[in-house]
Length: 138
Image (cartoon, rainbow, N blue to C red; front, side):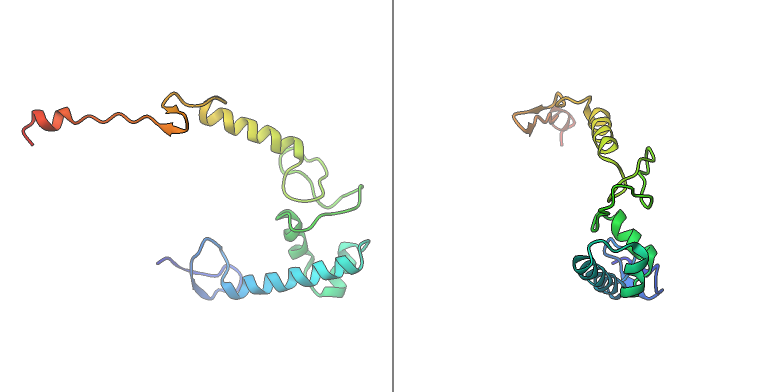
């Protein structure tokens, strides 16, 4: 079992793939629900208004946008930019063009964009050498 300290509150917790403990994750989820409900009731609200009305820090709201949990409606977005090319985006970390480019680059890097030679009909063709074991008298 991997034991770590929560990066937010410092409490010790059993690491489960997240850098924060369950208590902090619950608080994040409560904050997200507050923000989501406020935005649903006030669709044209700015980040400043949302922060003031929900008492959720603007950094946390931007984090929700980066995670893709919220989306900016305004076409003239000055808040989020693609981390790769700098284009203005509404949600997430990358623009659609960069996502497509990165997927293509990834596919090419792992197999040249084609199926590896040892795969046939979705099953791996394995070669096993057992003759050496019998030659050595084992």
